[in-house]
Image (tube, rainbow, N blue to C red; front, top):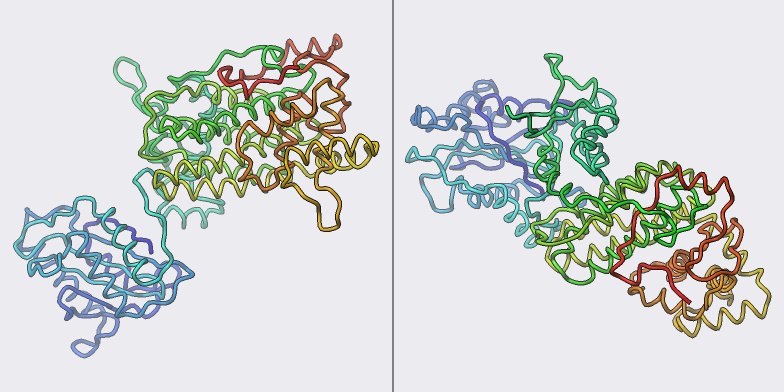
Length: 588
């Protein structure tokens, strides 16, 4: 049950809308289901006193405004309180009597008309659809004072949660005041009328988030906004310092042909300029050469940056599992990382990764504030992905997209647990939604490389395959067989064989991958370990690549002259958090 509250100054105008046909003739059988005294005239059904509905509507407006007129200048300028209340599509249809009870409970809870108070404000509840009502109240009491209505929205939300529980309706997650402002009905109707896929507010919110992902300075942030095609207006003080900013979509204009501007704070609470400055104050780590972070220099930049980001994301999941409130900052960094991946992802996975980034946006905000946190590494990972450019989705960068998506699933689930432990129902739900989108994106990205790995596992010499399967069974005894009796570990066995050929001890490497963090939330433990092992052992993420020559765990392969030239001209990988040995390549 969702309440939505607005305030206005025209009682008669709102009544005309409520009893009218609606914008699309969607208003059917408009009638009163409740009022302040139970005897208010009903323009929808009361024709006994006056057959003209317009005259009845005028009498109703006059009755509602009586105390407003009596209060004169003491009445508030916006004296109309308007609350629409809607049930979930899956809920049963409430009767008029039940809707009357809902209205009475809401006006009492919000202070409009407290129960047993003869001087409460005048109000009515109008029903013109099966699933919702509109409550209209005039905010002057019988003693001509204004009602005490502090936090009326929160009180209405809390009362709706109680009604849901008592009546067996779908129980929605309680909010905490950190959600972004939803588009208005007018904005949604305009989007449909103009053929836009979504309201401008939502398009701008996503564009601003993507411009902020990995940005190092305020100037870079504004430059990215303009490069994205947005109109940008920066508000400055007489000193020349920026005070705030507004953005608008090209071509989005009001009736006066003026651009429709949105301040950052109206897009989302954390997109105001002061909040953005706090995020930018953490900075980003200095870029280092690939060899300094154990990354092969002969991989293309998008692949190298995704591989590096997977290790940093794994570290963020460990911090989220630590039950530390300062991990709240990591959520913001993960949000930036998702925004960076979404806007540079291959076309096959772009839709699901963009949906994941949008869902996780809600999970980045809560009332918990981190007092001390270092987000430079994860913000640098986002920056590196942006600077490396779009991945093609084939070969090594396609495999590393799957590698990163697999890790981000576990990060999203860790975020869900972190929020659930603190009672953040909406954020926990958003994190779980993110995980589902990431799982879909992972399956899309991993289909080709995992199929090739399974084929390579089945093609291993019998003795080699049995040796690696025994290693896997010893480390993971719960990993059984498929329904047809064949092992489920073909891809994992192939990866252990590749690691052994590259100079690693398979048993030691597998134990290190398992010990990095829990695997209980993994949809497929084998897949998670495949990507961890290939990242730790610096193996190609795409098995079509040539298998590395035997080498020490951190030794870099030889590069050709062309490779070395390319290494000097491409952005380098972001540094991993060096304080955690689980994010560094293994040593023999």
